[in-house]
Image (cartoon, rainbow, N blue to C red):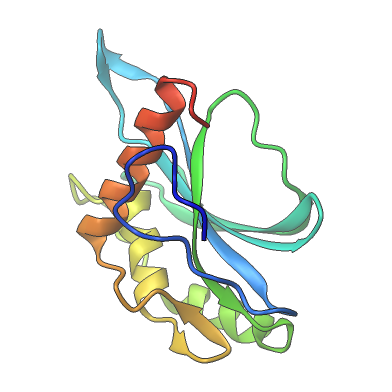
Amino acid sequence: MTESPFPIALNPVKVPSGFFPIEVVQFWRGEYKKRIPFPLHWSIIVRTSAGRGNCHEIVGDMDTYATQDRLDTPLRFGDDWRGSHVVGYVSPTRMDDLLNHIALVPVVRHRSGWNCQDWVYDVLKGLKNPDLYTDEKLTFGKLQTQMWCLLEAWEVGEI
């Protein structure tokens, strides 16, 4: 593994041949006051081929959160992209199991402070199978720190 040009909190997971990587991707959402940003939006991406994959996320606001799954979609992230990190992998034969797992993860509404980042972590922490796996060192704090490192790297032009 090559050394990262920026600080990291978690090493990217090495994806076995024939498996699909599971990534956390983050996006800028703007500021609610001058120089006070909204929390970054996190999505789970499973890359299934070059430039294509499945995107799993929650959409809406505190009162209307709902899951959204876009399958076999072009992966174009645009100007709001602020980095991504490989946190696990899935066997092509276990994709339906991943979808079923995601569908069972609760979406919390009407709770201040709960957002897409909590939901993404809740999805990931349940993947503990050799064919449907996330980093055993993954904690919410380490994932937040890693995503913050990516934001900082984006801001200084390292990614």
